[in-house]
Length: 149
Image (cartoon, rainbow, N blue to C red; front, side):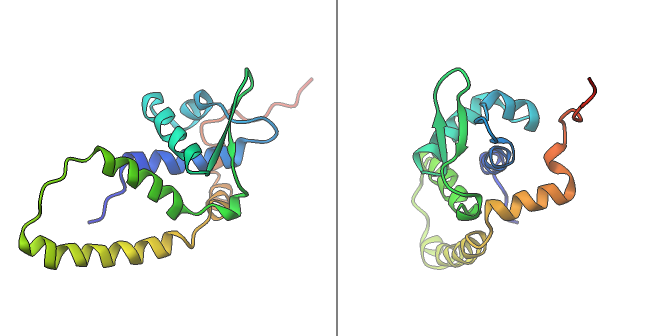
């Protein structure tokens, strides 16, 4: 069964969190850590790669943090998966596959990945933000707004 890596999951959660919460101020990584339960040690590494890839924009200063580099509807899940995949590939120790691996399993896996990436490239962060709002996931773990004076 295909497996969603921890880094891919946290990258998607972080980008959606930024998309939902970066108005008017940027979202600080400590806020994402608190809301999503993402370990800080992984988060900063992933966030920097997302900035480098042009998905997020880093904002410096005391009220700094992260914003989307583009509109939510112009960022796809596939882009985020590719960024994290490149990070994970750089960390992997590669071994030479057997003849069967090269000629049979490898091409099969490449076809499956191509199909999956086409589907993921059709899903935007806007789509996931709408889903989060519909399911109430945008407010999960956050205190209810208190408007009493």
